Amino acid sequence: MRHHENSSAIRIAAYPPRRSTSLSACLRLVFIGLVAHGASACSVGLALDGEKQPDLSVLKVGAEKATIERELGPPKGEAQLADGRTQSTYVYEVGNEPSAGRAAVHAGMDVLTLGLWEVVGTPLEATQGNEMRLVVTYDAARRAESFDIKELDDETAAASPPGPAGGGSAR
Image 1: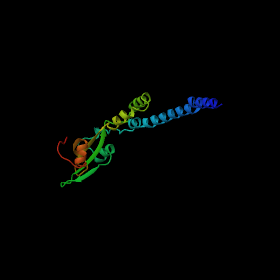
Image 2 (image 1 turned 90 degrees about the vertical axis):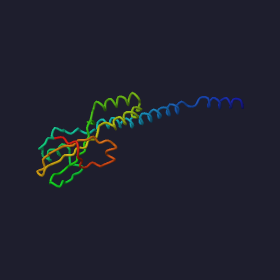
Image 3 (image 1 turned 30 degrees about the vertical axis):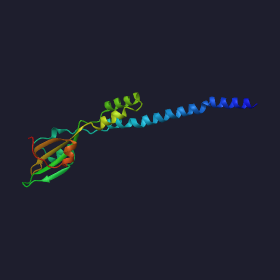
């Protein structure tokens, strides 16, 4: 009789119930799916949420300040010059327009790699575009006289905040 009890105990240990195994496998798949879905939103969202590039065709000598500000927004800084002129500094981004095509590629790569594409795709999207600094000198009548456009990189941005700058003006 004792031998009989041991054989049933061995049988239970050798064959665990299938229900808990299939349930845990299903839960693992659901968890992996949720993680992949949650991670996939980053690069796709960044590709859809870009900055519309301003129309720089408004930058002409004689253009009114209001016309320029309609396109670039309010200046980040202004300085009054001794002769009554004003220098206004604008910061804008180029090369990061919203793109449904880029978002679709990121979504496809997320599906193919089960979300692992985000390790590459998110930093790729986060580095899209370049910040530019534009200094416009206006005369006393608030009409543009000259323009100075420079690309802002991390060193320039850290070294000096956007403000009136000279040199390299274009007329």
